[in-house]
Image: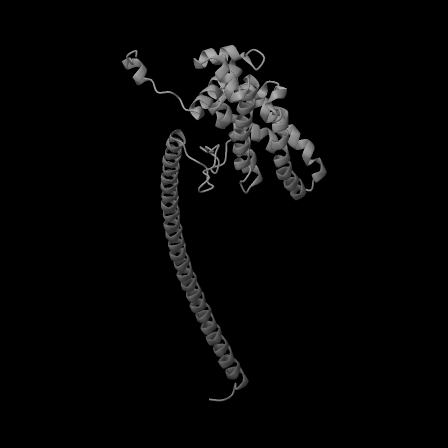
Amino acid sequence: MEPVSDSSRSRRRMTGAERREQLIQVGRALFADKGFDGTSVEEIAASAKVSKPVVYEHFGGKEGIYAVVIDREMQRLLTLVTQALSASHSRIKLEQAALALLQYIEESSEGFRILVRDSHAASGTGTFASLLSDIASQVEDVLADEFKERGYDPKLAPMYAQMLVGMTALTGQWWLDVRKPRREEVAAHLVNLSWNGLRGMDPNPVLTAATRGLVLSPTLDPRTGRPADSKEQEKLRREQEKAREREQRERAKQLERQQRERAREHERQIKEQEKLRREQEKAQEREQRERAKELERLQREQAREQERLQREQAKGLDRQQPGES
């Protein structure tokens, strides 16, 4: 019997599930780089360091691997967009949907490259166009409600939904390679165009506070039904929480400054009112003194007039009695 080397003992044989996942990841990278037609079973086997029969044993060929990859990527993107469209306000829905696509592109560039290529018939789960159609159906409901509220014809919502989703998807394909500006700025401009329209363009669009820093989870925890958190997502969530705390502190400081300014303004108004009241009191006192003086003058004039009349009456009586001694 041949002795077992240390290297042989150190290597652990993969389980069937582990080997299957390895082949999926290897195939995913090759499909993203070369496309379905440019990738061979030989390349997949060589990259995974296995023989071709192992690939056929698990998937029956590269078609099986491709189908799994496409299904996973479509489900991931659709989950992100569905989560985004669960917001309450229509604008926030559009903002979050745009962010969801850009987040997927940023975090899963290989998957997006695979989706935007013409899906091979072997995928069995539909093409990227069919995925966009599913997303457009959800956006259609958002637009229909918005159209009704604004008095537009809701029957036009499906057409506008296709326009909106198509615009966002093409922008995503462009951003896949350039990656500038950052995804939140791209999303803000997308929503600026779709929400305001060309006639009402905002020169400096920004996302609402409810959407800034948003990171969605692509999967759900089967136990809780809530988005599952990876270590990276947990890190991002902590960073978002810190950012929100900083924003809250800044808002608190701003509110405190506003309150101080309002208090100073109120104090200033009180002082002005007190000054005005004193001036009014002084004016009333001056007016009362003037009235008293005027009344005193009138009384003196009346007294003089009365004395004059009395003198004239006395003179008249003297003229009526000329012979009396």
